[in-house]
Length: 196
Image 1 (cartoon, rainbow, N blue to C red):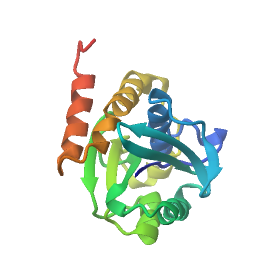
Image 2: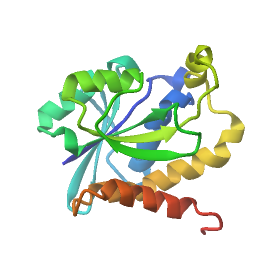
Image 3: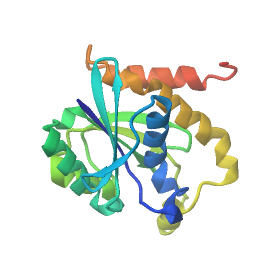
Image 4: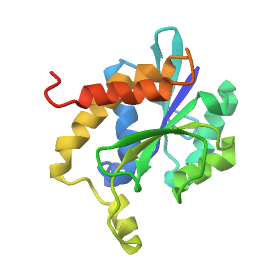
């Protein structure tokens, strides 16, 4: 079993915030691959699905960002899911908008959701770092991450979320340590200009 976690803040007030791109990604995966309807469990919303023979648990913590680790830790302990079977989708300030990177382990770069997860399950989980860009000055960071995506962002956001959902099954392929590279490659192919 693999655990896909989307980070964000619950409630309609935050729905379109840049900080909620992780929620958006997991929602798109759940929708695209016909996962079960979400149910309340582990202080979050949980949907189940499969990629081939691999069972996938999709989790959106409802604890608010800074306490996300409580929800992730509960799910991981209940199902005995090791950190290297956990994939966390989240917003990354230090990556330009519309770009995406994959990383295993490492620091939290000041991201409170990751800091909380680190405290509950260790740092050795996989991170899908979804770029939202930096506002340019540290004093504007909070307003930027808690601000809504602009209408003009739809031209890159919708295709990116679509590509992430299409490529998500690559994360379940255990044929080697290159699944992150295969996932990113598939996204690149999906986002190629004139790829119809």
